Image (tube, rainbow over all chains, first blue to last red; front, side, top):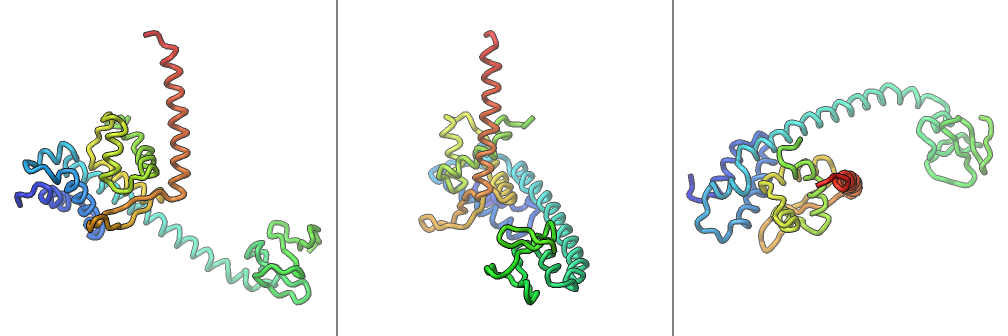
Amino acid sequence: VSGDPVADYVAELRRLLRTSPQRRRRIAHEIEDHLREAFWANESLSLKDLQDRFGTTEDLAEQFNTLASTSGKTHLTRVAACAALATACALVLPVRLTRAPHQRAQAIGSEVMVDPHSGAVVLTTQPNLVRIDPATGRRLTAGVHINH
Amino acid sequence: VPSHPVKGYLDLLLLAAITSGREHGYAIAQHLHLASNGIFDLPEGTIYPALHRLERDGLVRSRWSDVDGRKRRAYALTSAGRKELVRRRSDWESFESGVRSILAAATR
């Protein structure tokens, strides 16, 4: 016990938090800043005054710990989803890249253009190029569908 | 049922307080208390886990700012947060309208 109720409150909260050191520092800083502002002129401040107005350290720590626990699960889910996506790309992309240029354009998307004369795939919109509709596999020019 | 009646609407109230220009936790807590004429008397510490959750969910973002030489965490709504505020306000207005209609039809 330091004799400073705000410092004691924050120290107790830090002790109860089960989260990363970085987040613990941030939480402690925010809470201390709030308490110093709320009670700056109160010379007879007690720990009970703090708990009445701000909540107990146990309640507050529990809310942060629950949040950290659910955030961890969300993070793991995202990592798993990214890993699954990367695996799918690793399996599918090599197959796609072995196809002809116009088929590659379909695979990549409608923003990719194909030169109808050379068959080269380009990434810019130019008037002499033909758009490949990825949904139908048809070449599009001047609003007219051409069988591919 | 939330343990405190305000808790079910805390996210809406926090988003609204931030969008009305309150950036820091203390100012947000004061706003909730004063603008509600003291009706919302949640323990002030409750707003911080809620703010952190809103940030985790991408509805607010925060940064350290320097105010009179003190480092403070400032919150702002993201575009997703602004959309969420509109949605939650609409939900609240529908809910309030329904309750008012039922109460108006009730005899005292």
